[in-house]
Image (tube, rainbow, N blue to C red):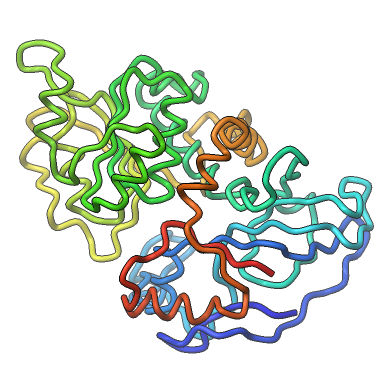
Length: 357
């Protein structure tokens, strides 16, 4: 089997590795497409992710308290689509197309009892299946965290956005999918804040209103609820930049909520907790795909998050394919693409790159 890994910092490469044959209850999946998650993967290529920079103790769940991760890194990516070519389980018939999260590799031995294996229905563009297993569920989970904060843990996926004014900071893939989900699930108004004119143009092509990345005053003027009460009910923060979180806090109305889907490799020095956060009684909650909100896990396994994603893709799949998927490149060109992204050598980085096998 062949996989894209990182042999040393700044050295992504195609590596040869082995995978066991499927045993009872398992199946072999041959990869067709694998989406690139640029932020996460570039950090691993550069070695700037915290596991490689300061170490991680999985028991204490604390950085700086455990061993520093080393190289090579044998797995990059979590957005795969493949076809079952050999099956030893009645749950996965041969010829079935599935979405999984196993990295940029030519195939995988899949055990549906141990990891999420999401069927890709025949009425969906197979390439869009890259969003089903993890990327789309990341965004759905953001809406669930909004529900837990604004409506309570017994609510549904749309109860945190329905009838509310929602600001999405960042017009990357997570931001755009989150904005489309907020629209689909009944938000009163959705605005995307993004500093890049090119990415604002993509958001507008999807029918979304936009403002410049730090235009919190426009948001406050747009949503005036009463004297001393202006701004967003909810911010879905989808950029890995502390300035975006600072903008989101400024844009909130009193007692508003930021649901944060970003990752701050360099910390968040631009965030001033003694200002709006304190004086307006704001909340910030981290939403990560490793856990849905407390008390909601039984109702929201990965398959349920994927089902919400599938509903969105069935409605807006043509638009997502046209406007979000900017680059489809052969698998063997993946290391060069990652090296160029890590070295900032591309004049216009892909919005969504997909590797074709």
